[in-house]
Image (tube, rainbow, N blue to C red; front, side, top):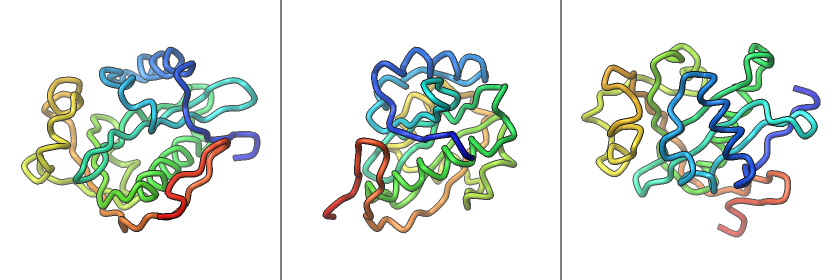
Length: 163
């Protein structure tokens, strides 16, 4: 979408990201620990969306996909999710997992499919999202990533360069 930039989040974005999550009825527990792999969508200086990755040896947990209600339906969630999966690939992740109670129809367009909790690697299941932040009734989804490192550029940052 024109005028929307996706960029790496900074510590200054944490409060805004937590407010977006609260407004979208999503958990913010553990978000601070994922700021190094969190992205925000901005229009000018206004933050209108967020997404984060929790990185584990066996894959990443895609979390905190949230868009300001005034900006929904404009492809921003799609832009954020795509950028986060590109970031995961640039980090060499072989798979991405997520938990959702409301967006099970959104994520299959990125290749995600439902899996059983028992099929999620133990290191990912040790995340706060699996342990306590999300209900046990949440849908668990997985997508295989190519695991090949490639450079991803975000304003001010290049990930995966030289790998």
